[in-house]
Image (cartoon, rainbow, N blue to C red; front, side, top):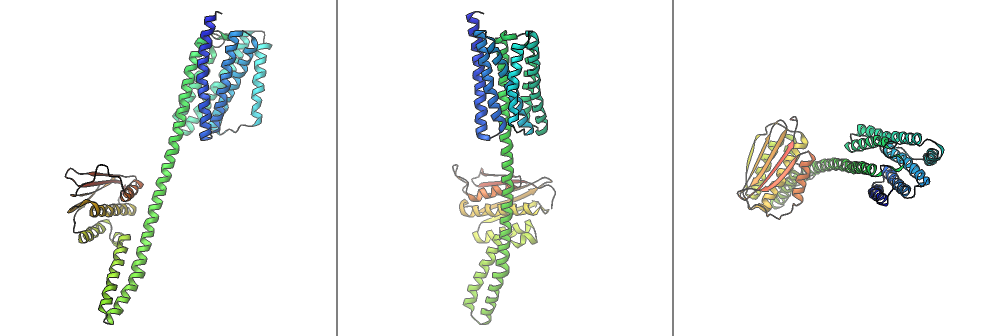
Length: 417
């Protein structure tokens, strides 16, 4: 073999070793981050694979059978480690010390094929069949994992390993004992790229699944918090109305009977404030008469307090909704009108509620000064968005063409309550 050919083949194997080293380091970093045992086993497998490439390079240069023996042993060890990683990923295999017997078994098999078999063809074919079986088995395990968890990344890995295992069959024909190194190395590099992409997709899929699960948990927590908030508001409103309201009413009656009108008027104002606070916390009309009546009462009270006219367009939503939807619509209108009074400098606001078989649409807009382009959402907006998104809806707040602010909330309603 000429020096130039040796240099080219070793260069190609060196490039393959660099790619494999990157795979090993990446898997190790993923293990440090995610603590998935299969990542650590993958890292060990690719590290041994780098040793395999070093052994075959040494054999090409020195032509010493000991390096061919080292190549054979490291090849089998890396293949079994890749299989172990697939079993850890798919079936939760826990590696034990007994599994380490694969290493001396691989060394013994390599010794037998290199030094114990007189026919190099028989040695090459037997080793190739074993390597192909282990690699294809790895692909089958990953394919079973894909069917179990619907992971497309596992499908990519499974396909790459199966094809790589079939590719090993050309060892005794094309790459026997160091021949055809450049051809084999380039094909192996393609499979390494495919396996690396599959691992990347697997990580991304896991992260996406974790994100979806975390988002679902946060949505459930938000719904529970909002429900607890409404329950607490209802309790406080009832206490104010039933306890404090009744006591103040009794005191006012006593003062009126005693002719103490000034004190009675003061108690009357306190009683009105308690009733307003109770109504603000949880209007009884929402529970007793429904959403539309509660919105009419809210609009009348808002107009009386702020001198801002409110036009209601509720004809498109005559049916009752589920209680949680009615609460969200009422709270969004309440917060939106509060923002109109505080920030809009408007003379009129419009509330429109429509619904079809699947969606309720709420629009609140005013004719005020609009909002600045760089304004940041405040807690009221964030609270409205949390309430709407907790129901699976969307909320948008924009400036209108005539200068005011337009709020639009869309919520899925399903069947009317």
